[in-house]
Image (cartoon, rainbow, N blue to C red; front, side, top):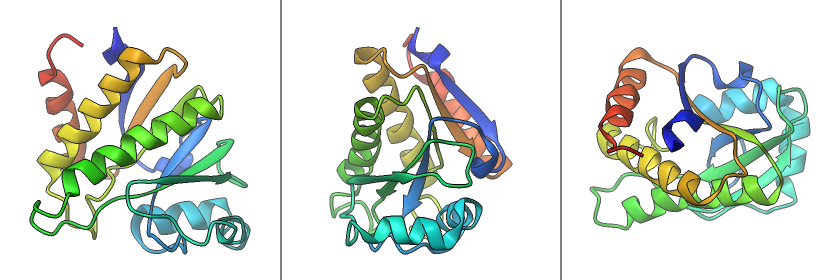
Length: 175
């Protein structure tokens, strides 16, 4: 059952041991606030920043991979979520692309476990209900067709978002 391969945690994503930690990055891959800043600090900001420079940025919806340095992971998967602009500028498809492309790259890199934050739900302003539905739907769809990933963990920083993910995961029909 796909849902048994999805785990929800409330806490700090930088402390969860996984093969791949997903960074909600900005398009410059320059480090910033929120999850992005926390991942850069925990990994070793200068090392991670230097590894990111090789890419010269990352378009929204795509993903780039770097070593994880001081994090309890092998790789950091940097994906750029959309900035919410009312929902009529392709935001749902771009957010879905973040999850699909990140999961594809995780499999390509032979990662068995990945942890995701709530992409675009911070300063990018994506409505939490919609973002949660997209995250969980895309993950369930991917896991249905790919057995290589053993565990996908969503690490939510605060209690309300954690509860929203719990509620939404329960409502996904018999996956």
